[in-house]
Length: 494
Image (cartoon, helix red, strand yellow):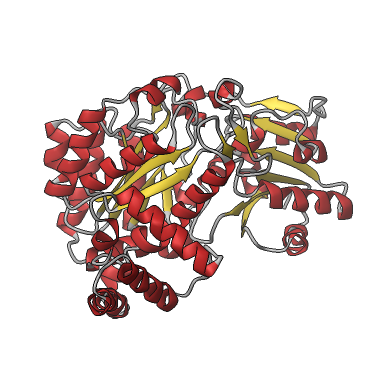
């Protein structure tokens, strides 16, 4: 074995699509190339030991914002104990601003951008000459029809136990400055018949959980309808063994034809990730985000009222030009629309994104360490930002978890942001923690807070107990419901 492809995934259930693309496109080197994935939190010395068991001559690491700090340790240790092994880096974290990055200095080569063609060619040169002289290699972007698709490389173990990532297109036509996709010129579609053929094979092998990584799934409605029809056909043919599909959609683009298709999906089979990010039009203009807020709101409301799709909607705190009051208004508006989950994100300065151009004018201060979260702006102090960070964490524990479905409306009342901020501040004052809070303790605290806010103590305890009991019942749910993503299963149970 000569070439090893590796990365540190955020969790075991995440199977790396990028590594499988590289393996699929290795050409004559594929037979001597292998994938070995790890999970963050694994000791660097253990990773290096496992890597060297393959006796590789080249190791390629996929580097991302969530694994770069741990991968630096792995690369440093690998270079110390096996200096003759050639290390090649790739991935979004090392594709921009490479100068000054410690991990780039330690490695032998770095491929920026698309690696499908450039990485295999670099390996050929390393193995057979001429030896590459340059350390940084800009990835060549080939026509999509020239790229071998990776889906046959999902193993039976992957299909049985992991999320399968798929993509019908690459790139994004929008220019939102906080997103790496803003650097793309457009979105490029794969041949649809070819792609659906790959999905057909995966389904025949037993795959049921598909997560699309397309940034704008519903941009081309004709394509979207054909893909959704593929899943509807599978649902009709196998009602007792349903598929589950996750798509990221443009919020203000939901024509009637797409609505008609969405309405046909039964509960527990469809999830939409919807990026709102901000409802403030001045902030949207500042970060080059084009969005019709009224249409977006109408579409989310329609999805909530007329479909069974599970709705996961994103907001970002800390965008330039937005203060807490503006964010709170957007948050309250989104709560009123009824999504199942609101992903309360904190702005991050991804390497290469244009958001940095606002640094001086809007006083943006970012953490210099991954994930490069915003620490303060000219409108939000550091202390206030920390309160927002804690709000986001408690929101995950209480609201997004689905564990407090009947209690949550009592918490939020008529002013969701203000009420939940009070709960967040109260919880932190009593626990000094945002992690490792046992569910039983959290439930008792929520009931106590409701009582202190004026609710009858026994009534508060009763509604929290009903939610807590519901979690016990969920554990006894049928296998089909258990197979859903955990949060969605809880929301459905409620």
